[in-house]
Image (cartoon, rainbow, N blue to C red; front, side, top):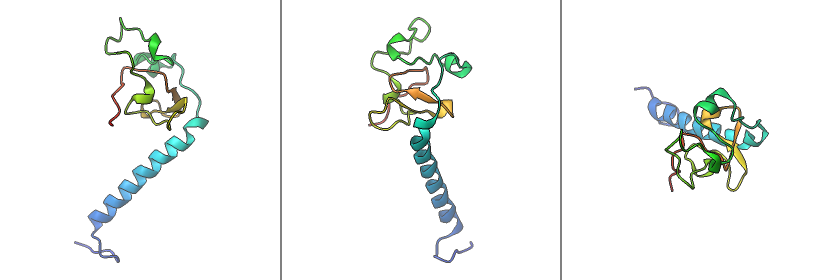
Length: 111
């Protein structure tokens, strides 16, 4: 096993680089999400997932998973800050989603 100058082995070094890189990418996506264009519900991926800008308008006949109170702001995938009206979502790279929106990939945010 090879040793790096500070005494850490390669595996630990690479792990630390990976964790730092992921954290930096997450921070960058949140910081720039306000500069991105909004996702259109007519976008093919958005339409396939039933994305709506207002969760209360979800077609429950088509998307029976939807339950009252579910919205992007309380989804595990939502990257918006605090009470922001829009935020990023890894499902829709390069676009922002409405905090009050919803799609079929909604997952409850961990407490």
